[in-house]
Image 1 (cartoon, rainbow, N blue to C red):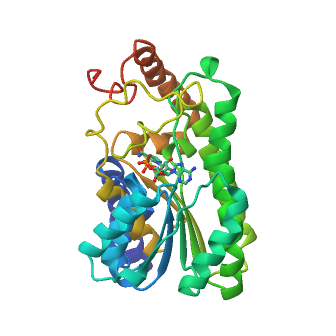
Image 2 (tube, rainbow, N blue to C red; image 1 turned 45 degrees about the horizontal axis):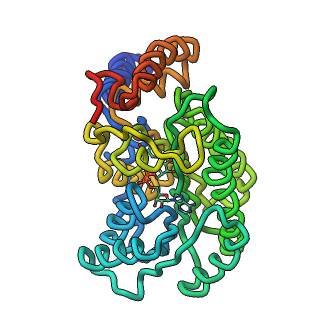
Length: 336
Ligand SMILES: NC(=O)c1ccc[n+]([C@@H]2O[C@H](COP(=O)([O-])OP(=O)(O)OC[C@H]3O[C@@H](n4cnc5c(N)ncnc54)[C@H](O)[C@@H]3O)[C@@H](O)[C@H]2O)c1
C-alpha cells in the first residue's frame, strides 16, 4: 500500500509542477487566482445583492467594475469627483443590467478631501443600511524622472493614493467590525510589488498600500469574515497615463501613447471579481512578461534588479527622447 502511494506521488508531483509552470508562463493571473477561476465561486452568484462602494468609478477600471458588478446584481455606490460622469456610468449600468435606479447611489467624493469622508460614509450607510464591499480604486500614476520632479508632486501622490485610501478605509472598517463581515479591496498595482522607473512616487504610494493592508489584515485577524484584499494589476487599458502626475503639479503627460497593447479592462475586472468572490487576499493580474516579472521580484530579487535595470534604462532613454515610455518596453517605440 505504502509503495503504491509513493509511486503515485512520483507521477502526481511532477504533473502538478508541470501544470503550475504552464499556468505561470501562459496565464494572466497568479496561480491562486487562476485556481479560483477554474474551481471557485462565480462572481454573479457570490456578489449578487451585495452593497459595493467603488471609488474612482468615473473611468477605467472603476467604471468597468461598476458595469460588471451591475450585471452580477450588486447594489452600487459610485464615487469619484465628477458627478456628471458618475451619472453617465449609472445610466449605462441600468441600460445593461436588471438592477433598478434605487440600487445605485451616485455619491461624488474627492479622496483628497479627507474631512468629508465621515459624512460620505454616513450617507452611504444610511442609504443602503450597510456596506458589504469597499473597493478602493481611485488613484493616479506618475510619468517623470526623480531628478526633475518637485517634492510637491510626491506629496500629492501620497495624499491621494495612500492617505485618501487610508482615510476612507478608516471610516468604513468600523461598520464592518460591528457587523463582523465585509471586504476591503484595494486596487494597488504591480508597482506595489516591483520597482518602476519614471514612477518613483507612484511606486512608493502603492508599496505603502501593500504594507498598510498586509498589516491591517493581521490586525483584523479576530474577524475571519472580513476580507482585506489587494489587487496588483500590470498595464491595463484606461485613462491612467492621460491622468498621470508629471514633474510639476498641473502639467499633463505630453505623449500618453497607444494603450491598446495593454490588458483589456474587462479581463482585469473579471479576474478581480473572481478574486473577491473567492476571498483571494492578494491578486496579481497581468499579461506576460509582466506576470513572470512579479514572480522574479518576489522570489529572486537579485535577478529582478538586474532585469529592471536593463529594461528600465530603455524606458528612461525613450522617455528622455520624448517618446511614450510604456509602449516602448518591448516593441518599436510609438510616438502617437
Ligand atoms: N491602468 C493600469 O495600467 C493600472 C495598473 C495598475 C494599477 N492601476 C490602478 O487602478 C486604479 C484605477 O486606475 P485606472 O487605470 O482605471 O485609471 P483612470 O485614470 O482611468 O481612473 C482613475 C479614477 O480615479 C479617480 N480619481 C482620481 N483622483 C481622484 C480624487 N482626488 N478623488 C476621487 N477620485 C479620484 C478618477 O476620477 C478616475 O475615476 C488606480 O488606483 C491605479 O493606480 C491601474
